Structures are given as structure tokens and as C-alpha cells.
Image (cartoon, rainbow, N blue to C red; front, side, top):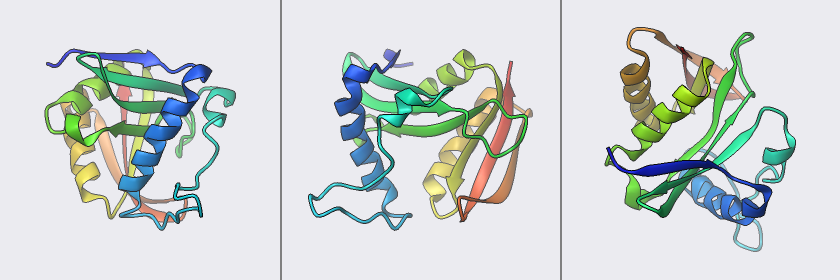
Length: 163
């Protein structure tokens, strides 16, 4: 397992989260019709809401001391009774494929106990395969998957309980 740090991002790190969010949206633009603004940046909901919204937890990910991505755990759930949603999860490309994403996700699942939801748009086959492996490795037979329309897009929703 790689050494990593998963620390809450304070409001003073808003610019960092905003920059990483641009990279996240760049990757997502393959599946979402995300237009660029005239200034060359992707338009999306204001990053500041991550600190204003109750039950939203933005975190920075570092691998071997180097910034490697971010995650946001929140309560924007689809199913009544669920506790947690993986609002955003992003590992920069140079740190992918070495187990960091799996290790960070498992740590988040351990920190935030309860009923989880993680969903991906159906076109993002790579993310679906990643989350299936990660969640099954963590939850064993205690996970379920369903096809749903979420925010108007065909999606795959995984749900499980972290105890």
C-alpha cells in the first residue's frame, strides 16, 4: 500500500479544490456535455458550496507527500435512508493504476460509517469497473448495484453498508 494522506480541505484551500475540479471536469467532459466558458474554464456549481452545505466534506489526497487528488463525501443521496454519497472522487492521472484510489476509497468508507451510494454515468465504463472492484473488495457480498436515471442521465448506482 502506498503512503497517502487524506485530510479535510479548509476554505483556505478553495483555489486548490477549484483547480482540481477543472481537471475532474476535463475528464468528465468525455461523457457530459460540459461547455467551456469564454475564459477556457469549465462552468460548474460554485466550489464554495462544498463548505457551506451541511454534511459535505471536501478532502485533499496526497500520495508520498505530493498532491494527488481530492474527494467530496456528502449527503446528496438518491435512496431514502442512505447516509453518504461519493460526491466527487478524483486522482490525477500520474497517480492512477497503482492502488491509491482503492486505498483512499476504503479509508473514506471506514471513516464515514453507514449506508453508502456511489454512482457513475453509464457511458463511463472505466469508472463503473473501478467502483465495482473497489466496493466489492471492501464490502464483499454486502453491496448491490442497480441501473437508474440520476440527474436525467442513465447511471449505475452501487450501494452498501460500511460497519
